[in-house]
Image 1 (spheres, rainbow, N blue to C red):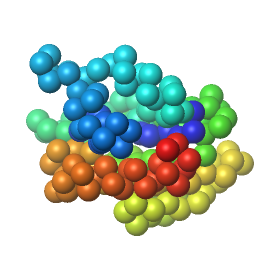
Image 2: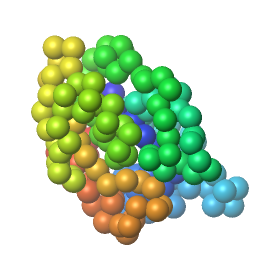
Image 3: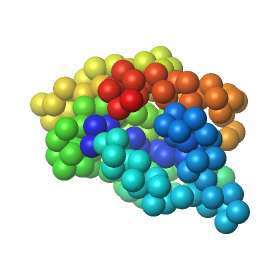
Image 4: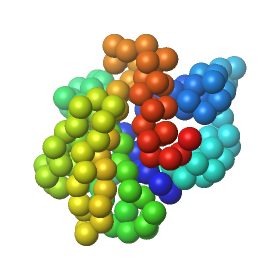
Amino acid sequence: MDFFYPNFSNQMWQVFGLVFFGDSQRLVDAEHKTFRLEDIKALLEERGIAIYDTACAVRRLSGNASDKDLEIVEKTDIPALLAQIPSCHDIVCTGQKSFSVLTEDYGVPVPQMGTYNDFTLAARPMRLWRMPSSSRAYPMKLEEKAAYYREMMKQIGII
């Protein structure tokens, strides 16, 4: 896997559909109100994309999934996770919670949108990318989000 992307949300499959296929619905099964899991798995495997969250357990403090209303109960052991994917050199974050784990625990400054900051984790050079939130509530058109992700994936060498 070439990059690890914590904090994946449902609209991300539409972004990936645009980035890789030019079709926001390519990975969506609208009829069954779900996603094309086998197509998604094949795409991720083919492109070397790993997905995990920065927290293994969270507590909702209200009835929504807003970052401000989530409490991290158990953080993911990022160094142990990355030890399983030695070719990974990029971490992509979108949400404030995932950034707080990486910035606080590993001393990585938060980069500007669409860019990265270099850092070292367990003696491994890494890049932390900041991308637009994939949440539908984030005020950016889907096509604009996809443009950010397309450029990042070009720079990483995935496309």
